[in-house]
Image (cartoon, rainbow, N blue to C red; front, side, top):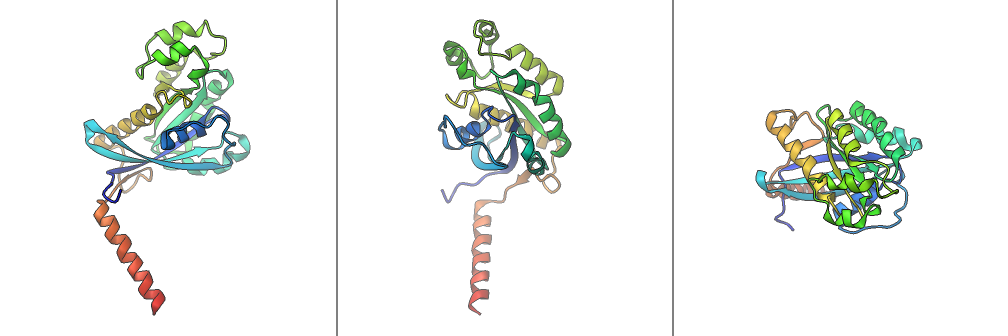
Length: 238
């Protein structure tokens, strides 16, 4: 583990209505497990994950802030939006209200986050829909999903409607299941790739964008940590 380093650190926020599965998505990403009934998020929860983007030959550390979905915590969670480079805007495919409210969450995020924010719309809980659909759906989302949505009364947001919303707002889009793990890693990786492309275009400045940081080599970081520890030890012993 001592030899692991990363090239970039990206600040991500996860937002959306309460009970859409934001905490479950974060736990699935960081721990590769599923909590059936997680406690409601009070304010924010934090998790981090190292991901590799092979085509870029880059290792990225995602620092993810899972924000509460209730209005009473809105003033607190807004402070975590500031400077975010990536956002998972989550709704529940079986809850039309959570999808409609996504517009409000998006406007709030865009008001407070980095102006070059990469946002991916995530339709969670597809496992509650047709099991065969969940098993066969690929990360590229074939149109067979929408064909089966009318047969299942639990689905309240069609694939086409969500895709249209994402296209209109300039968002990336994926449907996922925190329960099965379907497309969870892919959602974060897709957003991370988009942020890397923006870095290449010069949209993010390492010195000016708090949501994107260029990491120093691990050896330098370790050396600085050791020097700092020695300095503190000398100070305390004097």
